[in-house]
Image (cartoon, rainbow, N blue to C red; front, side):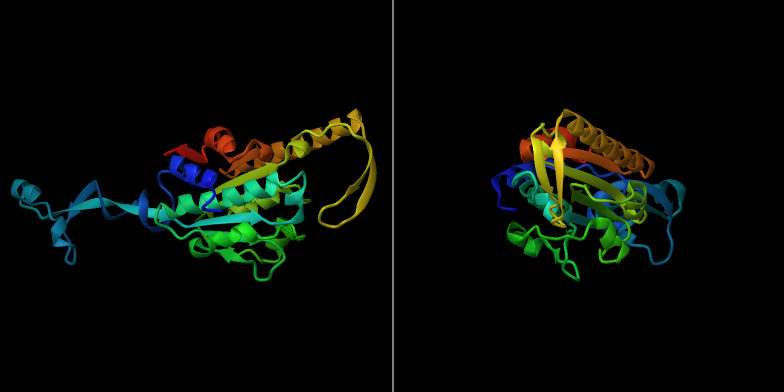
Length: 285
């Protein structure tokens, strides 16, 4: 998917909206809390045996007769992991959800790699261990089937998801699974430096229309249910969906994380420019 023209345009137009002072990472473009070898001056301190003599400030020595060392702001790049839901529910409502999920997975991996890091794209499915794509294997995402049945909360309970401490963590899913949003957000945010939850829904999932009597089939369990999709049923569904989204948003605020909901039918360019930039997840390059 990295060769997708829409993904390439987005990768050249945006950067990750990361905090200015992430907790940890590798050498890269973001400023850390410690001292390092970037070109941005931080402060002076007295010379100590073993310090790099190239950082001695001879002008300060001439003024004060004291050897002083210049300290520079440490540059780091974040440790990044993208959790991509590859369950069957990502195929509901047509091809748009899975297509946008693949595009976003590739985009976030590419943007993270531009900072000098080695992002991991974790495919949330039924394989054990879960398949993890790197930048070298990112092209495989194009052919990854969306056929899993295990929801994210179940995978976390199994400790099947290889999470790293102090990572910038991006979760891409429709979040239409059973589970307590508070527990899920707390688990995902607990050891992350940054957490972004990105919900992808189809237009019909977001705002269904009355269709009369229908037999509904669960995409993951194949269970069936006969339901009358009249105005009353649709209104009740939309109210429940809104409560779910509001609860995720509330729990994310409590955990200093970010929640955003996207309509897949609108396309990558639109959701990047609108929702993802408005939420601060992306910023213009």
